[in-house]
Image (cartoon, helix red, strand yellow):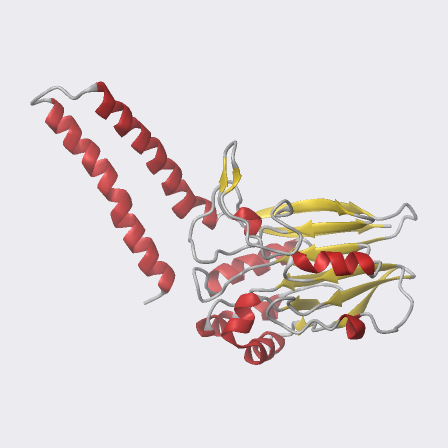
Length: 301
């Protein structure tokens, strides 16, 4: 049985217990008075139940499209890069979800697509990659690998992804065209679980006007800044996955640049850094105020 089905079934039973308890309280109240403390506790429990129900069953099934302008200059050149990360196929996500993600990416009509790692969660996820074959873009679809890809088996994950027409970039560049200008897209291997080779990645090639670094973990940003990258795009953080009102993200995975960088567009020294919240979940099924997303980076320079 699918892991997501099991966890959802267990959660459904647990969530059903609270309204049943409320029914019992109403029945009990007819027999003897219920104190205000118990009423308040029950009301608080109902609020938490509603929030938890939304976070577990509703928000993870949303798929937001974020249009993010990235201004790197004023010369009037531009390129549209579609981004998705952290699919975690084989965990809580399956081929049906990936099919929906691909439809949304195709609707963006981007010049290129980049998948920012943690594509599969376990070996079963490699059997769910078929929808990648339908990806459409003017200048190709690319990917980098992340932690869960390495834990599953980097060599087999790479082969599986590339068998569906997506090129996995491992310490290497590709060059994308915008009119008569060149954008260099560099894919770096995962900085903690892979073998990042910065020298090979930035080896001499055709001259480019703009350099974009694709990395799973935003901890790669400091090296990118040193090497004069214009824009780094990363995943990994899930945006905190659970964003508590007035308190911020429940948990941001550790990275070399600290917990203050977890979603959206940042200035990182002279470089721009964009971190997507991803389109899947890891370890915990729920999302709260951080819906799954695909992103269109509208890059201009």
